[in-house]
Length: 200
Image 1: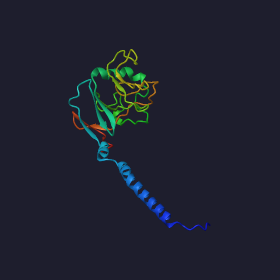
Image 2: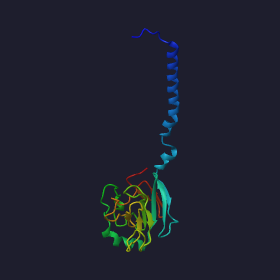
Image 3: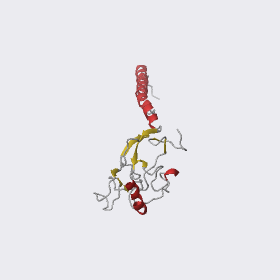
């Protein structure tokens, strides 16, 4: 133990500085901590979304946001629906049996939809989360086969999906596009984010 006398003024200054620093850190941390709390908008983002589809014409697509994800709604034409028969043997999971993105029972059909003409899907590639682009028109196009029947192309790694969101075989994407829970409120209105099993 040292015989040097303790400098009490230095000790007092050190204690005061430490306390001031701790208080400052606490005040500084408050805005950051409060920013972790979900905002009202974020809370609302998880709520079901009601959509008016009366203005969507055959062959057109609209996109709405649900839980921060783009959800596509397409009114398919009879010609578009007819292509699904042709792509059926070419897709990896034609009956939507894989479990990574469980398909609701009401969409476990060729068109993956409640009504044949109205297709609803999350527009995010199941590979790395990119957003596929519309390639709705059939025929030869860059990065697509000459017998292309219409669907979607993920430009990041070349995964392709048919007009029911079913991924073609031997592509990077492992699964079909996700089908969110949804139900029809009328012929022209549907709600995304809830169905018989997932009521808000």
